[in-house]
Amino acid sequence: MASPTGEANLKTLLESLQPQLHPAVFVFSTLKTGESLPSDITPICQFQEAEGLTLIVEQDQADRAGLTYLYACRMITLTVHSSLDAVGLLATVTQALAAANISVNAISAYYHDHLFVACDRAEAAMACLEKLP
Image 1 (cartoon, helix red, strand yellow):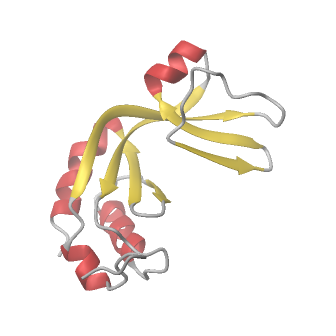
Image 2 (spheres, one colour):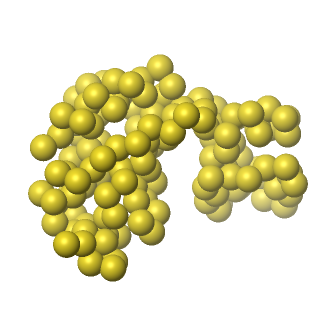
């Protein structure tokens, strides 16, 4: 049974991945330091870097706000509640995707890990993840 802080056992994590492909298309965008987040944007993730604020936002929102962006992608959530200090989960997942020639941008949040893969590789990524032990 997973602890309140999440599962840390790699074998259990891999057996419990249950990847979920979200229907929306997401993009990566950035705002320079000092630029304001448009009021009609609700990022799924944002991260402050020295060069500016990185945003991951639905492509439709980015288009409406006139944001420039890169990497149209789909989000796959590994629905297992993984511990933030679990060892090897993302290494195993990203290695399997790399072996299938699938680029991935991974983000770990409090409860789950989220994988962003190019739209045209999303189904292949799901198939790859479903084969993991």
